[in-house]
Image (cartoon, rainbow, N blue to C red; front, side, top):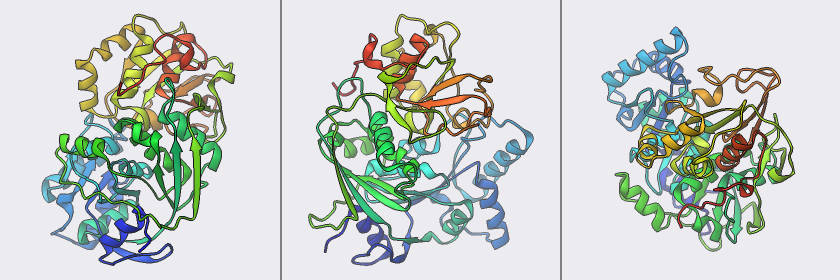
Length: 426
C-alpha cells in the first residue's frame, strides 16, 4: 500500500483497505458539529424527515457561537430551537460564552487521533492538529449524519508540505500560514488535503498547531493533517478524549505535490486589506491603526493571549486605538484569568468579549470600525465589509503583531518591541 494520512482515515471509515484520489466513498462519522448559523437548516431538514429517533444525535454537538450573544430576535429564536432540540434528542450543547466550535470540540474530548469529524464551518479543518480528518459540511448534511451516522466523500488529492528548521522568537504559526497563503494563493488548494511535516511542526505547541491547520480553510483545503506525537497524545488525554489511534502515511505515499520550506528566516507577516493572500512583511509597512482584535478560532487561544500580555505588561495601548480580545473558549478565559493575563491586558486598555465568533464575523456588531479606520486582526479573514463597514480596512497578523501594533499605534513587527520575543514551550 502507498497511502497518505488522509487516504488511510477515509479508507478505514469506509471499511476499505485503501482508497484513491477521486474515488467516492461512504464513511462512518465519529463526531459531528453544527453551529447556530446552520442549525435552522439542520433542524428544518430533520423535521422533513419526520425522524423521531436520530441514531447519531448524541454524537453531535450544537454550538451557539456565531450569534453569541444573539443580536436580534431571529438569532434568539434559533438558539431556543437548538436548546429544545438538544433536550429532546440528547445532543451536546455548548451555550453562549462556552466558546467557539473548533475550540470546544477538542477541549471537550469529543475527538481523537484517527477520527473523521464533520462540522458546519469551513474551519473544521482545525481538527487535523490532532491527527484527525476534520472538514466542513452544510447543515443539511449534518441532518443526514444525525439520521445515519454516515456521509459521502470524494477522496481528495494530498499535498505534502515539509516545514524545516524552527520559527525564530517573535514568529508564530500565524506568520507561517500567511506565508503559505502568499505562496499558494487564496483557495489555491481547493478540495485538496494538506499534510504538514518537519522539525518546525514538531517544535510547535498545540495552540500553534491548531492555527496551522485552521488557516488551511483560506487555502480552500478539504482537510489539513499533522502526525500525532507525544504532545498530541498528552493533550488529548488531558482533555478526556478517547484513546488515540494515530495514523501515519506510508513511506511511499503518493502526493500530488510536495513543497519544502525552511522557516528559519521567516519574519512576521501581515495580509493587506481585503486580500488574505496579499502578504507582506510587517517590518515593511507604515500604516496607522485605530482598532486591534485578538481572538477567533484561528488565534484566540491561551498562547495568543500570552503573546499580547508579554508585550503590553505595564504599558498602555496607543492613544486613539481600541483593542478587543475574544478568547476562543470559556476555559481559555479562565486559564488567562488565573495567569493574570486578563488584568495585564485590561490595565493596558484592552476590553474582553465573551468567547465566541460574533466579533470576528461582525454579526454581533461589537466591533464596528469607523469610516476610514484600519483594523489589525488575528482573525482568519479580512474581506471588505467583514466587520460591518466596507469603508474600513482590515489587516491580518499574529496576536503578537496585533499587540505590538496596538502599543505603537501602527502596524509593527513584534520583534521590535519589549516582550515581542517571548516564545511558548521554553
